[in-house]
Structures are given as structure tokens and as C-alpha cells.
Length: 67
Image 1 (tube, one colour):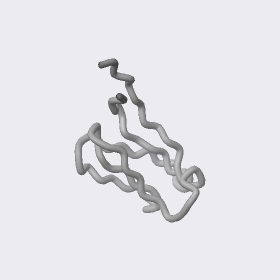
Image 2 (cartoon, one colour):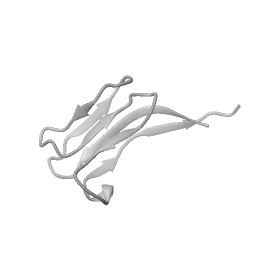
Image 3 (cartoon, helix red, strand yellow):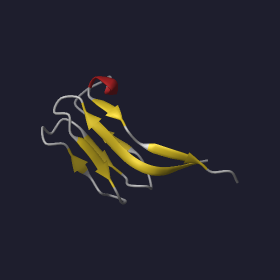
Image 4 (tube, helix red, strand yellow):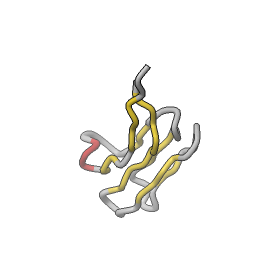
């Protein structure tokens, strides 16, 4: 099971790095093209259309939890 350490993305349009730090912490970059949400509880991204790699670079960090 993976644990979210950092929930962030970099917009490829404006270059802004946005980070969601807590649950329901919905953040949008300054140009309005990319959004992040979920903090350390879940990963959600918003962007204009597929494919996502055209709009943002994923910067989230995960930790593999051994159970």
C-alpha cells in the first residue's frame, strides 16, 4: 500500500507548482488550466483534456508502506 507524502503538480502552461496539503484542499494554478486536490488522503487532478501529460508534470511523492 502506498502512502502520499506530497500531492503536487507543475502546470506546463504557466510553470506554476501547486500543492494540495490537506483533504479537500483544491488548488488551481494561476492560468487556471491545472488543479490538484486531496492532500495526503487521495490524488485528484483537473485539466482541460486528455492526455494529462500535455498539461502537467506529476510531482507527487509516495512512500511504500509495508504491512
